[in-house]
Amino acid sequence: MIKVYSTPTCQWCVKAKKYLDSKKVAYESVDVSSDQAGAEEMIKLSGQQGVPVLNMDGRIIIGFDKAAIDEELDKA
Image (cartoon, rainbow, N blue to C red; front, side, top):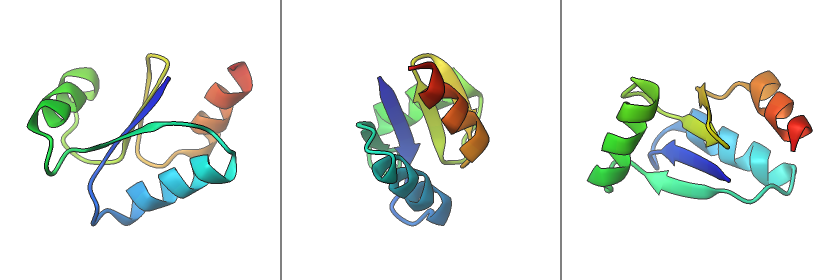
């Protein structure tokens, strides 16, 4: 399962989600600007307050890192 922690105004968040869409990968989007529990979960998992943060089956990817995303998708 993939979770993308993001905000609506973050351009890198939009790019990360569009990239996953282009790969036809399903994911859950968590808007940390309006979901306090989601924000706390993201911080606990990543130690980061910045977005995007992707949780790809337990691997935490900070930022829009195509290589890391592709590496995890290749494992699936």
